[in-house]
Amino acid sequence: MHIRRGLLGWGVFLILAGAIPLAVRAGYISNDDLSRYWSLWPLILIGIGVGLILSRTSFDFVGGLIVAATVGVMVGGLLSAGVSGFGGASCGSTAATTAFPARDGTFGSTGDVEVRLDCGDLTVGVGQGSGWHLEGSDTHGTGPTLESDASTLDVRSRHEGGPSWLGFGDHDTWRLTLPAAPRLSLDVQVNAGRGTIGLGGATLGEVGLQLNAGSATLDLGSVAAISTIDLQLNAGSLGVTLPNLSLTGSIQANAGSVKVCVPPDAGLRLHTGESIIASYDYAGHGLVQDGSTWTTPGFDSAPVKIDLETKANAGSFTLDPEGGCG
Image: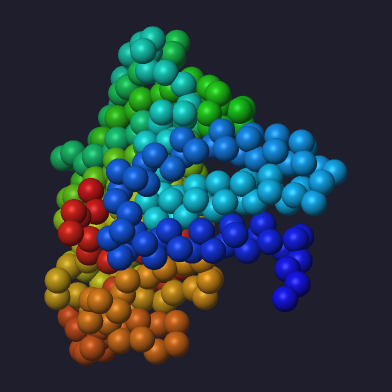
């Protein structure tokens, strides 16, 4: 048998990236073990060095194998547990932040809310009435860029477009309270940060969330109304609690893990992707598979129907985990 060295590294990488999520699900690897996998990154430098030393020998492939194995282990750990804790900790310190002046406003009968946080921590909650409130802190105590009127609220980091969300900028902390009375559409983007979004009591139209390199929880469990969700995770971890209300939408994971908690009596129709490095645990929850669709028996007659595209290009979906989705 002849092994093509040019493909050997790819083989090792793919085997480890796929084997680790399987080992986690089988209980052979704990979450504590996964949290230490990112500390293996110096082995990448070692592998590069070994490759240079052996570059003119018959063992020149060894360095590449070390790099491929290390990256495979790190990616496998990422697919299993996401990078919770990475985003907020990697983009600046909260040690020298100053509170910025609080901002307030009021919506009419409807409101469109857009929030973009580049590096930091975002907490969103719901209060009574029709008014919104924003408070928090940042390095200079100046607060985010904010535009609002009777029907819109747009909140953005002042360093938007700079390198901060990649992990080299200031750390912002925002606490946003939205009103329960008007019907709201919400679009949130968190880059290199943490989000805790609890919308209980709110009357919602579309809810959008894009999370890039970080962790977040989205609690929709007790919303008054909602029409659709559009959630995208790019490297990280996301926990979603769905309401006992019929809704449609999509959740997409690119290199990360998604936990989804659903009402016990809701009918589910979950459509999955076909990536070979994605995993779903729907079979253990009584759902019936038909191609790439998993459905609760009796879905058509269920009083509450949740119809979602749950697609992992490189990641995992876990339904109703024991520890919840918070």
